[in-house]
Length: 131
Image (tube, helix red, strand yellow):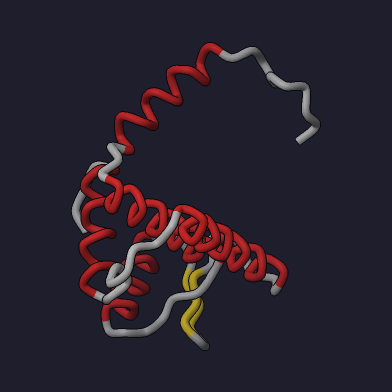
């Protein structure tokens, strides 16, 4: 993929999802939320299995995050090999969010800028929570 805006990534994720039959019947916000949670849970399970965040693997092949390794992993994935790993599950999370944003025609570029602008005004460690 070339350099796309978040809004363009959302439209692309939605287009792919539609083309694969995932929008034949409308999903509720609750269904989307459950899907968001499932991707985060899958990332946690990768962590529990001992995988490092920078690790991408395909059955027996393990790749890191060096540019040449990422290119090789992209080639394997483009040939139908399923990538696994913490980072891959986090990418799935973004794709799910982009799909939802595309379906709802949300401008994530603008929304992220709006939220970041507000976060800049917040007090240090606002809310007083430990984590």
